[in-house]
Length: 267
Image (cartoon, rainbow, N blue to C red; front, top):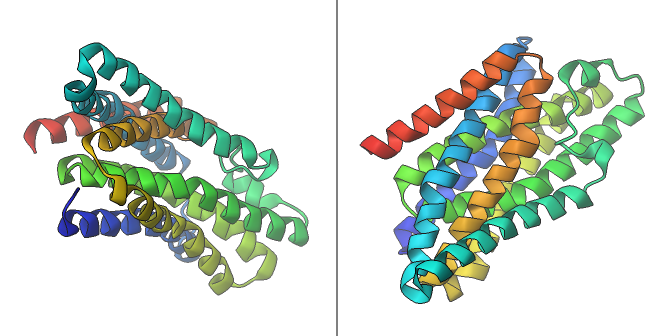
């Protein structure tokens, strides 16, 4: 079982990733800058980091953890089962969220600003906050488990998730602010949605730590890889493309992979 220092570090990093949702609200509150090219690059960067680390670090680590227990062939099979199990989990959550309020069916900033009804805006913002919170819960568990595996893996993952949480904060803040005129209420909902990540980490700690074994660790690492690959393909890459800067998004993906490769090589 991980020691208390590793657990507290993992919880702290997960909290920072979750609070990045609030940062999206802060940026919206104090700036009118809406560079879609920068946003597309940043989302591509997050996707590159999370995809690279999933296939090059987490899955091999999971397979290595299974090997002493199940042999080489068994380790490969259970790594794949756990990987696709993680994808199935986040896909199920995605399916349960109504399409109109699903953060993965993203509303652009212009769409959020141009909506006509204050009531509709308020409902949209509230449902987005709830939906994003639901999605942030397993992300929090994923970040927590990855952080237990060491800072060299955890820090790039935390940075990637934090980057992709920022536009989610914008998506919550804009409709709530424009429907109520209250920055405080909009910011409060944005923060509450982001706090689902550390809550997910705490839930993971309470439910997993009593049963923590090398096999549980391997299952979690492979499932986390599946969750992050799904988020990259279902949310980040389509979101980056939606802003109309294809090459900026691809440059972000390549830069994210290169950054992750360099960090694993030199850390």
